[in-house]
Amino acid sequence: MIELHNIHKRFGKQTVLNGVDFQVREGETVALLGPSGTGKSVLLKHIIGLIKPDVGEVIVDGKDICRLKRKDLSELRAQIGYVFQNGALFDSMNVFENVRLGVTDEDKYADLDYVRGRISECIRLVNLPPDTVDKFPAQLSGGMRKRVGIARAIAGSPKYLLYDEPTSGLDPVNADIIDGLVQRLDDELGVTSVMVTHDVRGAFRVADRLALLSEGKLVMQGTPQEFLESKNAKVREFLERDFDNPSFAA
Image 1 (tube, rainbow, N blue to C red):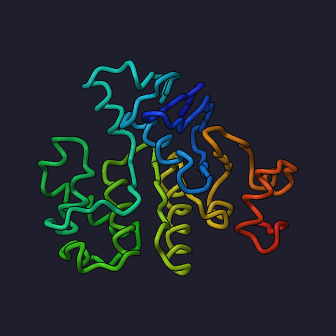
Image 2 (cartoon, helix red, strand yellow):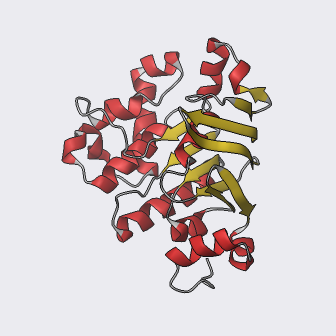
């Protein structure tokens, strides 16, 4: 379970998060929505301890991220797969070595037989052909790079998956492919997921619950249906900007 309590974060004079309470229950997929620049990615990075709050608590599996010693934080992070916005693949490494970086257990990382089998399985899970492992990022399409990034995130068999704008920059067809992949992995792997996105349609397809972040605060959290029925002005404005028909049903 992931719990964020009263999170405040400033960068210089800019307040990015202003008293955010956010919860993700075990087995859920939650989409964190909001316009660009509203602090969605900042909130996501709090969960893995890449950013620490000025005020507030970040609790993962009952452990306060901010109070953990380096070794304990490293062990907790091994349970969290992170999908970066642009894939964040290393251009000098082929796909095999990029995905291998996601194997967080040192003994398993050093076991080449294990690594070959695990990488092969991860490549299969993200619907890429087996020979993709020999290619370099520059040889891949944008959609393929996104999928390799997801393969790396699941290579360590994490309990949690955090997605930072997984469909950003993709055409609608590839965005749909990634949305379907996120949904299938959640079902097959039984992970708990948080997906940062500004793509409302994709969020409605994938998520059990939605959360809308605006001006440093969570405006609303609820199911897709509860969002559709909401009378909150900020919720309506955000949905209607993405749906031609605000009564769109996921």
